[in-house]
Every structure is written in structure tokens, then in C-alpha cells.
Length: 225
Image 1: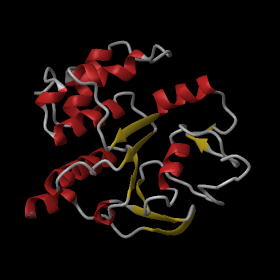
Image 2: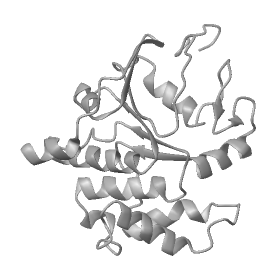
Image 3: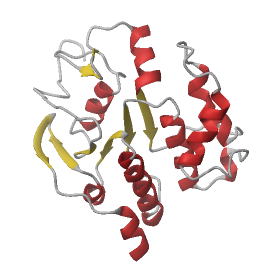
Image 4: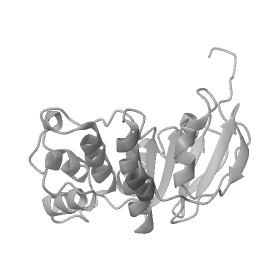
């Protein structure tokens, strides 16, 4: 701000492999959300290099970044960010309307397939207000994967959910990861760390630990709760 530069991230070096399931953790203000914004091509104002799926991202213009976000990155947010008074199917179709590549010939069929993939094949015509919090998050996840992205980014995806529903969503993330989707969760909830393959902890804009604790099945935890 003004003449004072305050770095949100400092000397961060990070590689995320295809098929990984990663939790980026840290307290509020630690820099984890800024890191997610960089990974998600939402923030291009940084010094350094970033390559996504073989594409050098740093230095790209606004339109190129928008194309990358729409075709190679899926976003899931704490607040769901669904359109009100709009059906689940219409919400999931939305990213396909911005596809300028022409690669999706049947967007409605693709959207239906994504909703079936997250277990909502029987809720296609339900509007947002007719869905529970967990169902709304599943719609948001279906919307995030409908373009078959290279990476799925989830920012506090269980923050608005009760414990059991959060376990249900984590079980879905594990299922999608088992199908080959690379997933990065950004959270301050330490309970989620047991359900991922890798935990990266950030403090004061720096990575202070990068560990693979071993993944616990959220579905098993759900059955025992």
C-alpha cells in the first residue's frame, strides 16, 4: 500500500504432482489464500515462475489467464457461489457457456454427467433454495469439474457445513481424486489433514512443513460417526 510493500508470500517453492490430494493449511493471514489465488491464476502480480500443466503462466495477459481458468482449473468455494433461483443443472452448465474452444459439443449432457458423478442425478431440476448445504456444495463441485480441469482448487470447502456433511464432502473429494483428479484444499481446519495425501503448512508467507501423513478414508469415518 502506497510506498510500503508487504509480501504475502516469500520464497515459496512448490510442486504439485498430477493425481495429488493436497491440503494447504495455515492460520488466517498466513498467505494460504494468496497462494491459492496464484495457483488458480486469479492473481498474476507476483515475482517468480509458475507452470501449470506445461504452460508457463507468469507473464500471460488477462484473456489468456481467463482461458486457463475456464479450461484447466476448477474452483470450489466455502460459500458455494451458486446462482439463486437457478436449477442445479443450469448452475453446472454455466462454465460451458464461456467455453470459446468449441470442444464441448453437448454441454447439457456434460453437465448431467457431472451431477451424476457427484451423486445428484436426481436433483437436476431443483433450484438452489431447494437443496441442503451439502447438496449445494456438491453442485458447486460438479460445476468445478464439468470442464474436466487439470486441477481442482477448493477454498475452505467444508467451512459452512456441519461435521457429518463435511465428512461426506471429503469422501466425495477422495472419490474424485481416486478417479485421477488433482485436488488442492485450502483450509485452516486441521481435521481435514487426515483425509489428504499431503499437508503443506504456511506461516508468515513461507512453507514451514510439507508432509505426507497417510490418508484416512472419510467414508469409513462417516460410517463410524
